[in-house]
Amino acid sequence: MKNKSNKLGIYCLLIGLLMVLYALTNYWKINTITEQPVLHQSRQMVLSNLRQVQADETIGAIIVPNKSKTIPVYEGTSAKILEKGAGHYRKSALPGENNNIVLSAHRDTFFRFLKDLEKNDSLILETAEIDYEYKITKFSIVPLNDSTILTPKSRPILTLTTCYPFSFIGNAPKRYIVTAELVNTIDLVNK
Image (tube, rainbow, N blue to C red; front, side):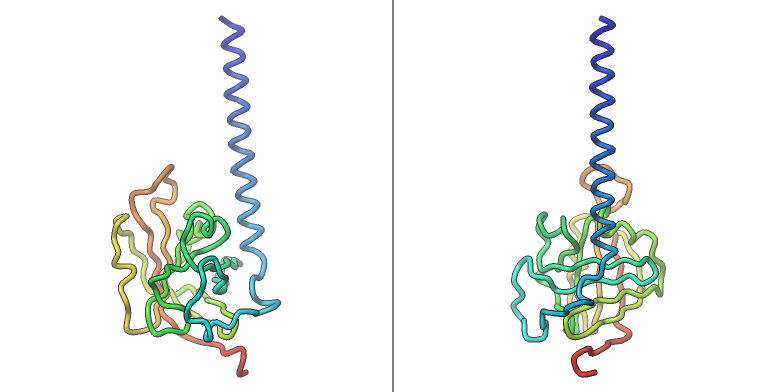
């Protein structure tokens, strides 16, 4: 009986160590991705000529200056896309359009820092041609099935969404929303 108990203890310890190793590996991977520049070196995609962006195509990057984060943004919100960055909701506006751009990422990876942001913090949406600077105006928590985040707007708005609560294990019951308004654009092509 004691021998079975010792084996069970060793198995539990090994499983615990493997879980910690997995979590640390994911943490390292996400930090490596978010701390490197995405488009600064070569701004290849010209978004203004692309009104039909293809799924999984790079749209740009979100730069969070006060957190030293750069998060790649891809078209679509599939599980595969959200493993490598933030996803753009296909039914929302594209950068440069006078409407609501909605981006989503996982709360335990790329959008973990959202809980640390404050009103008036800067967010920069970097594209191939233009950098769009937004200031955070509002935070909200909504039910899981709330679709008002996709509501069209009459002005350029950036909406970031992730699961909530941040420390919840499993599928979270709510969504954490960060809303930001456009305050500045930097045209990199016609400088």
